[in-house]
Amino acid sequence: MSKKYLIVYFTRTGRTKSVAEYLQNELSADCEEIIDKSNYKGGAGFLKGIVKSRAYTKIKDIKYIPSDYDEVIIMSPIWADAITPAIRTYIKENCSNIALASIITTAMKSNLENVGKEWEKFSMNINKVLYINQIDDNSLLELKEKLVKNG
Ligand SMILES: Cc1cc2nc3c(=O)[nH]c(=O)nc-3n(C[C@H](O)[C@H](O)[C@H](O)COP(=O)(O)O)c2cc1C
Image (cartoon, rainbow, N blue to C red; front, side, top):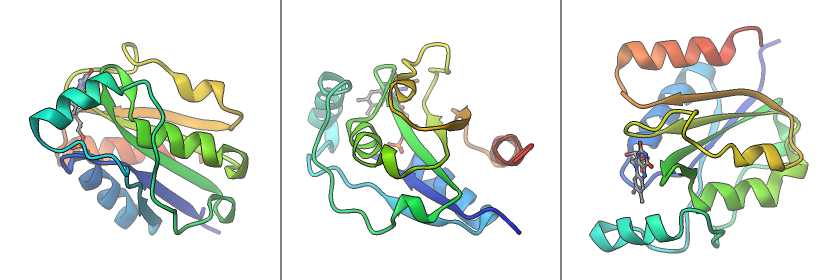
């Protein structure tokens, strides 16, 4: 039987959303956008994102219950070499309901060497930790293959 996946993501400018939607289609997954109640739009929002990159925030209520899934794929843009406040908050609030998680980051240049692996401090089993910076057909296919390799 195929694995039941939930994809959760935060996006400010749509890059992470485009990867989430690709994986949603490829994996026949349910998909939930995490909405930060704070506004990070525009130039002021960018600066606020830098300042708040290591903070928690308030997010809108979620629709999907993570414990209903075999694996939750958690996707975040990288802000100042950290995951976003919305995704940090989602993990904190839901980690006890997540049997198995994979983490995927999107960024312009930061790879996982640069990024603080703060998801490790939450009590959650981690399957894969992957990143995608350049978003094109080959990179998306490569990401999907790494994600599903060996389960
Ligand atoms: C506040 C802020 C900080 C960022 N910091 C980094 C960074 O440290 N390294 C990096 O490679 N990209 C950084 N970026 C670029 C984003 O990680 C990248 O564009 C991401 O894919 C955007 O995803 P989104 O379109 O889903 O919001 C930053 C973007 C923002 C808004």
